[in-house]
Image 1 (spheres, rainbow, N blue to C red):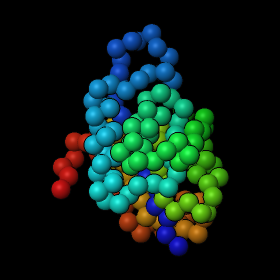
Image 2: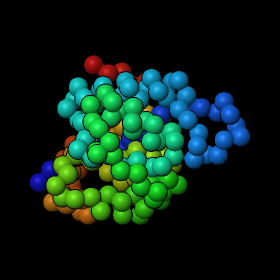
Image 3: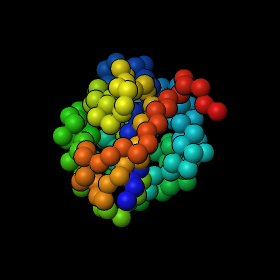
Image 4: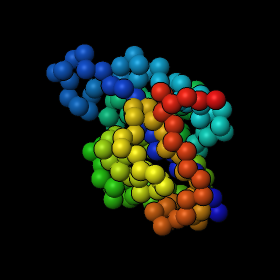
Length: 166
């Protein structure tokens, strides 16, 4: 059985107010623009997820919500997971493993360095850095989300705003 996992790093954050807590930092204008662009690219590739799991950080949650607008998904498709903020690979795996097997395409929204490190567990050529608003999409041969780490990678795609798209 195939499952699709999309690993999405939040869009470029704004540093206009340096007094804001890290959790509260919003998206910059470029981050807002890039979120819409990447959502459109995913939609054009028929990569709209069934369920979205996001870090509670403003910049990650805003990226997820902006992409959901392009995908015409309502809030029932979104879950916020505290564990995706400042996550380590085991934290990400635990959140993913909790997802129902009925979900075929899952998207997770969060942060570096953990999202780059997690994506590199699957990619044939490791990334130095998953850019802001970057997406790693994986087709996996897994019966359940609990099997993701041990599942064969059937296909992988890395895309980000500055990458040429045709």
